[in-house]
Image 1 (cartoon, rainbow over the protein chains, first blue to last red):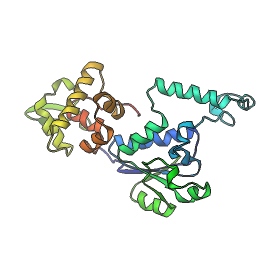
Image 2: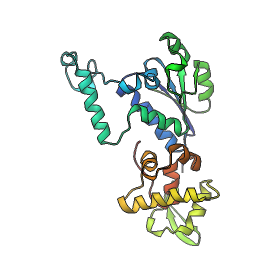
Image 3: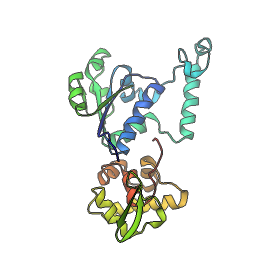
Length: 155
Length: 105
């Protein structure tokens, strides 16, 4: 077998449903391949570990060409909720776990979860706002320390 | 692909070390396959997972991913990773002589 990846550190910076999943899937996939993994949540990505927000992530209905829907329709009240509902239904059909279950499973798999200190301060969050699986709130420098010797993926 | 002798049986292994033909597998091979994955000794709890993977494969044609493995077997994700630190579904599939589970989740 050729060269292998031994370690990845994945940054989740977006707070939409479609912004959060790719990073979660990559982290979970890394662990299931036996690859060491860290997840670093920054900016709106913090919503994915926020106790009250993680169950309410939404699909962007406006300014999202992937929706194949005119933004003019996307601005109608409730469109984002409808799009989110459809996406969640699809995910359930394909046995993709919800954000809360997924994040917990990733933590259980031994992936380290970290919150970005600058963003936590910017949004006025504290440690109590986050789910218990979050190990620590760390600086960007500390993140690079944890990421040392591995690949870094920004999402 | 390579040819190797495991517990006295000549078998073909793919590039990642999975048995090419699952029907060539027998329980006698498990301990040696496990040793190659640094799972040593193969405890009764490991066996529970290995047998479960094997049974799932025989019943459905593929081994489950980690999430389904945990859900269906009742062994928590955390413990699965303690048993198989290099990936529970992947490692247990290899020891069980079945193809690598291919799901993304």
